[in-house]
Image (cartoon, rainbow, N blue to C red; front, side):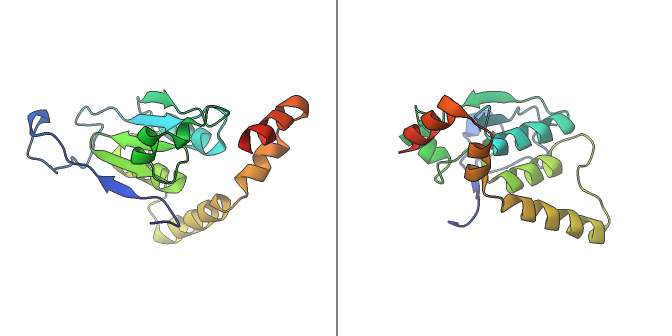
Length: 159
């Protein structure tokens, strides 16, 4: 999908366990440690790191330099996340993109305290606020946080 994130199912090598294509409903319980592709100052990456912390999930970090190095444009990362943005979550053969979908996936597939209410009305209200927040102009907010040479360098590097 172009407008949002995707949940991609990658083939699982047979020697890693059961037959190809199977996916454990609870990856953490099966011992698969998620890998988060992120950038330290990315607000979306920070949201996912907070989600992982709230759920008490152990995870591996892979920093994707979205600054002047623009590693998010490299072919290896484009295969992982065709939208070329961070964060991206990899859990075994499952790749999840889009911040809201990643947070939802973590909440539904990992042990730990539930991050969403069980009451359908309350859940709908939470999702309303989450979706509203997801529409914030993150680039503009990012520039608002910087000053002086850092702001100039960010603008120069994005050209």
